[in-house]
Image (cartoon, rainbow, N blue to C red):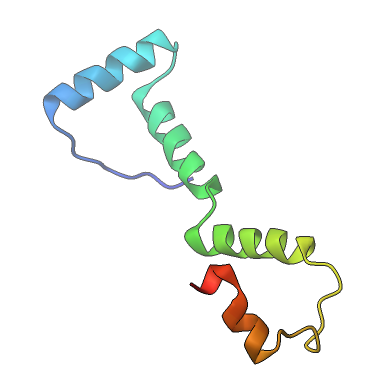
Length: 80
């Protein structure tokens, strides 16, 4: 396990000590939990990939030949 040193304002440290005491823990344990949680969070790339996979999973039997004609594209209300 690695040790790190973090400088925080006195009031932040006091509030952290109070929170740690309320949880019957230490400030170090609170910081460790926080940093561990950051490591578990999904990155923007991972979130985008997951959302893409979810959308692609909902598309059924799409083929390149399923294209609209030029006239059909211009008749669509979504384009207007």
